[in-house]
Image 1: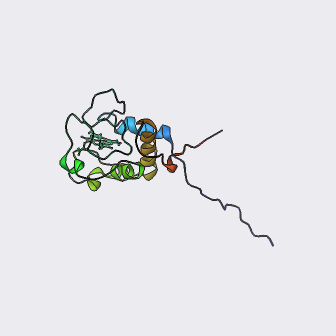
Image 2: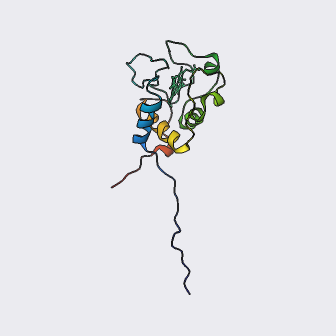
Length: 135
Ligand code: HEC
């Protein structure tokens, strides 16, 4: 008698989908944020150089909320994921009006897109952001 082990698959974790992250940024964030250093602030702060930066410390024309400036958060993949799940839940009193992205993978894709595109941040690259290679 043979034992069937078909269907046994090791799930090693899904790599981030940077293109999907870009689509999410364009859909949900770009109305209020630019990631290009030379472009002036939209209604939200410029996100260039975001990674490794303390929240609320950029030279932001409209001015941060006190809550953001006092949050002590450093932006990296994990903190971004938590923030984007529900900004007001993580930083009560933030003036970023965004309901949040409930899907973990979507937030990962978006955070990894930002890690890739916001330039020379101070934080080391996150392993979760390694892009999937397809042939
Ligand atoms: C309606 C406009 C608006 C939208 C949409 C929006 N933001 Fe914001 N964002 C803001 C504002 C305003 C602040 C400043 C909040 C504060 O000071 O409390 C902010 C702050 C931030 C910060 C902190 C930046 C810093 O310098 O510390 C990050 C990171 C951020 N937003 C990312 C995003 C991402 C990613 C999205 C898309 C999922 C997004 N935001 C959508 C307006 C917006």
